[in-house]
Length: 279
Image (tube, rainbow, N blue to C red; front, side):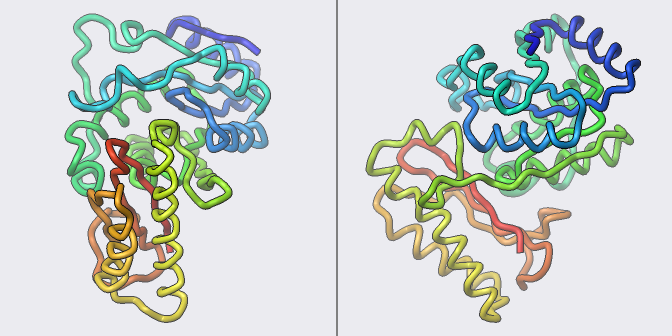
């Protein structure tokens, strides 16, 4: 397995791979790899000849009061795990190489970024779409794998790739959960014992919504209200949002149905976790 540290070298290798006829798969990550990331790498390995895993803690998607400085970083550990999962090339550039002096361009997806996480994290999705656009241009993959846990992010990236005719197939990967149902996240390591115990209520609330929908309930406000009651029953939780939205537009819906996403962001103490379910 190779480790590439510069944009120029990654561009050179991407050109070589393209010229050789290899199908390139990309899995963008910020490191701190867990089983959720590894499942995406294995998915890419089943579809591509060469799998590139980017490890880059992207500064432009963090707000001024968020956890950029404390975000876990261990490239050697992550590279070893990625290799075991089927990665061929780890691309781990420095921020000054990705965003050189006088960098002045932002990729902005309209409308889909206004609600949910976009409403509470100004500029976050501009950082995500800009870095993903750059990674797609640098690595030149035929396909890129993104997890469904970041449901709004997945929809935004799909929209960007379609709108800009990028010619990359976006492959969704299923959310991987702990045995008790908590969605795997690099930020789970921030949780205290009490917060970790309470955090399972996020997936339990989604299961409650699923059960209500399966039994015939389609009133979105009623279902979201029941979810709120369940989550607020835990002492360490503070709901930032729970919404039922059309997955294609991120617009709120009054009635639940096919292609509706129920998404949430909840603080457990100081740790913000997200989760979602698409009906």
